Image 1 (tube, rainbow, N blue to C red):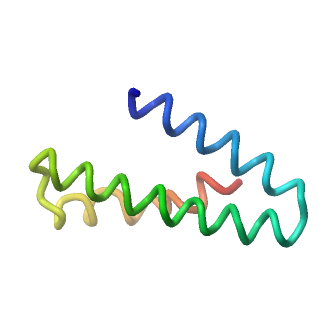
Image 2: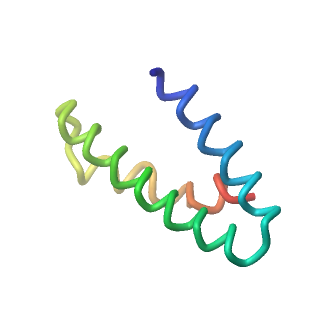
Length: 68
């Protein structure tokens, strides 16, 4: 599965869960944390240095972009 398709699917799931109230938001946060951990593992396995990943992606606040 391509990264773009995975991001789109995650966004759709989070948007839908947000409509379920507090429990949906909490589960969405849990789901996003698992997703983020998986992305970090895939990036590391691909040989990208973790430091570069943090420098370029963390300032973008991707968790806020995904959870709009």
